[in-house]
Image (cartoon, rainbow, N blue to C red; front, side, top):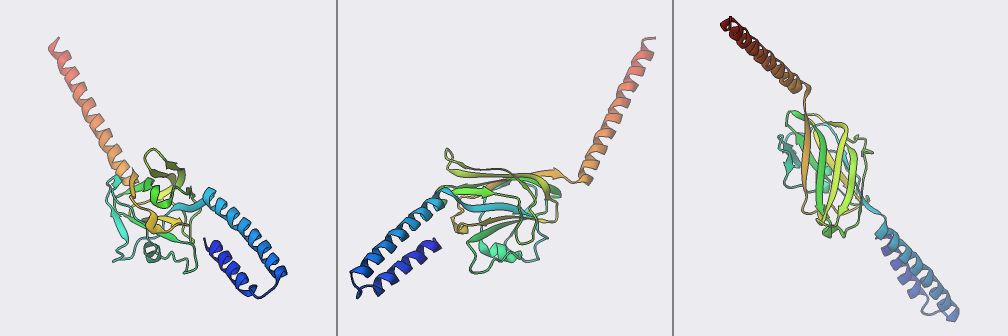
Length: 235
């Protein structure tokens, strides 16, 4: 888009300077206009068919106290509302500067006591013009990606993007998950919602395993005691 504006402005300037010229200058201008038209057309086609925004999931340090952009995750598996903003990125130290292509973030603070190991996001296709999406696990601004990419598709039947992340290091309890997008205006990511998958922390797994083992021993003892009593009664 920026390239289109620059080319149009250059054409207007050339036309203004050539009004008092002669036929030769006019012919030269027409040739320039023809070439620029080809370039603009080629650029437009590339923009329509190429990847227009990328998305990744990061695992930065914890949010500072009082950061209102950090949404708390307490273990519920659904996120009824997911919205992106540049201000949310800036609040956690991701600032690409005023000349960068549009970017936005969604920040989730994990207080669930479990490790987040998967994330599925949905956004409406319409506001983004059904443009292609690209998901990756390359990290951003020195912050590593927490989850790998499972799939990144346009679901024409539902009218939503289906962006699925899973595996990777995950996001332990007490840390943040950041959804980072670059290439499209974050305000266009509308109708956002998501689903979070978790894995119990090692301590929770140990307690669960111990409980199952003790319950098994208790039941085994009860069964053995009942069997012995029945055998004694039949003598």
